[in-house]
Length: 396
Image 1: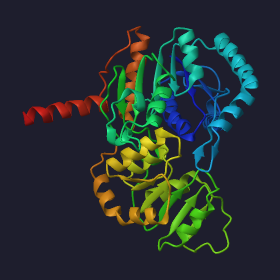
Image 2 (image 1 turned 45 degrees about the horizontal axis):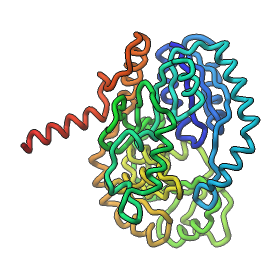
Image 3 (image 1 turned 90 degrees about the vertical axis):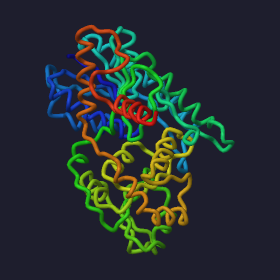
Image 4 (image 1 turned 120 degrees about the vertical axis):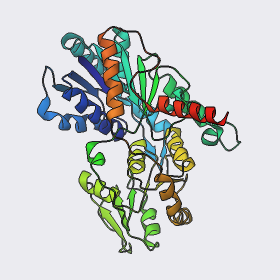
């Protein structure tokens, strides 16, 4: 089939996840045209540089303009984000119109797959092409969440949760089907929704867990130099990514600043005693898969990250905190045995469940079928519902 694949460029997790799906589609003989924005374009264009062109098993990666967020002090700066996007909007609209004309003229797409990306979705809806959604964000809107993970300070559902859910709801409405990747599995509340395990790159699937002594620390911003001094006061080795390699005066010998390396990072993750990072879903899913306890510090005003972190805490796989402190870090490290015990019950899975769902959806589209409310392929939503029903039957 000819597949138009859209990847949002905000956050590299979308790109690494999409690479996994794109590899599967190419191996299945489909012809792909990928539209992607931001840093994700550089990553995917490099990843598939040797397979560019037209025809089955071939992928063409094209850059589009997408919206982006501006961060300040560990939080989303909404005002700067708005002005920055408005400033770039005229050139971005022209670029996207040029890509639109090229795709219309040269790529008769039969189906659209979107990883939370609007351009490809709107293209599909405008041309009455079925759209399949694959992402983790739709869990906000298409699943039911308890008050313990969505409550605000008042004890009522958080306003931030409501806004986050609304923004996800209006992003890709009316898709053919929604495949939602997650390490936590709340009840599905909407039809045409299937839960699948975290989508993992092959390097993670091949990694062997060998717990060591060090703690892996990953920061998306190099501004938090005070964190390094906090780590220096703790009697543990720390391997820190995302804060450069220049050591501050007085930095303890227990703190190693690591240059970014994909294989080096994976090795440090699989052998870590624990990991301290933000609330991004991709790394959290990898840590849970490898049974590495995690302390999550989600970006402020980014409730999707906070929801991930709250579920991490609820399931006992780690903890979360709105602000990282020495006391909070010590408390987390003291509880590592309890987190390890909880993680021992987590069943790691590969990507086969996702691939079976994708293949079934493409087959249904090719046959001209209506949108399926449920899939024949096994998925976590159906499996968990069956187990719940079985447990209730036994109790009754």
